[in-house]
Picture 1: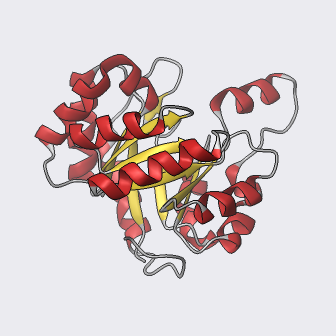
Picture 2: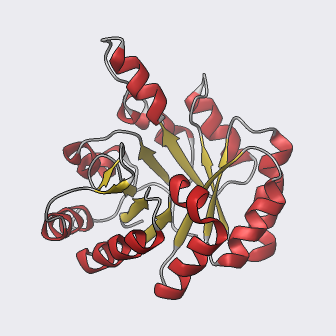
Length: 236
């Protein structure tokens, strides 16, 4: 599949999220993500606003669902999301419920392996349960906590090739990647590229990063799109 570039709108103000999303679309992004902070702040209203403003763009709702899987997914699909995120740490039945909601409402399910002891095994397990995509994820608190102790901060790239090799569905890597690392994700076989904190979103203030981003983002998008086909999975 060709590389797909997604912006994670980890912003707590819907008006600013809409402005940032519009900038991302002008720069060449393919997907929008209603990040967890935006969902917590604006809920279904925020997803509806994104859908109204961008009627033809895929929207990922980063629910990080742990329970009540069918209802949470149903609500987001009906609000306009095309993709929802469920956690591998959830019970098997919850993941199955989210997958069923995806089938019932024509949406897709992204399984997130954050905080799993066996991240590779968790990715394969979620694929077996019917997830359409894998989010290989090193968490915000985990990264910052380890760095505060003076230890090397873990990176999604550490096991990305192993995760990609373990599954037959598309993978995206998330969690503190630098700009240079983000651009290289397709080289690892991970065609779903996500830009968020710290590249475009200020993770401490939960607002758009300072500076003139649009031209820089356009160059990033061009570079990633120019990579060509990634031989791992296909966009369903």
